[in-house]
Image 1: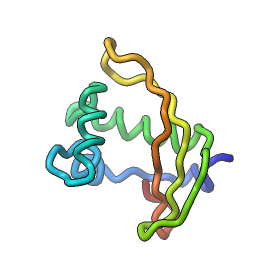
Image 2: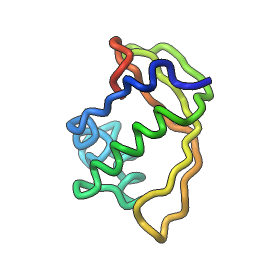
Image 3: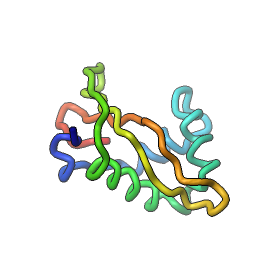
Length: 104
């Protein structure tokens, strides 16, 4: 299964900064550590956003379930991070489609 309406997917740069790359966010800090160790940061935020959009548009979704924020989709993620010494990553992650079905 693919992400429904994937061609309409959007990634909010403020959400990436304030959640996925924030060492201070109570939930996001573990994700921030993962992304920073892979070579993502303020100088590569557009690369991260492009990668997230590519995952939303091209990767298979393993499952989906309803949350208070919208539907949470779990894709199989396969990508190459910006750091040359970090191997490509293959793992499941999550994408939340907000009530509009567009936000990630």
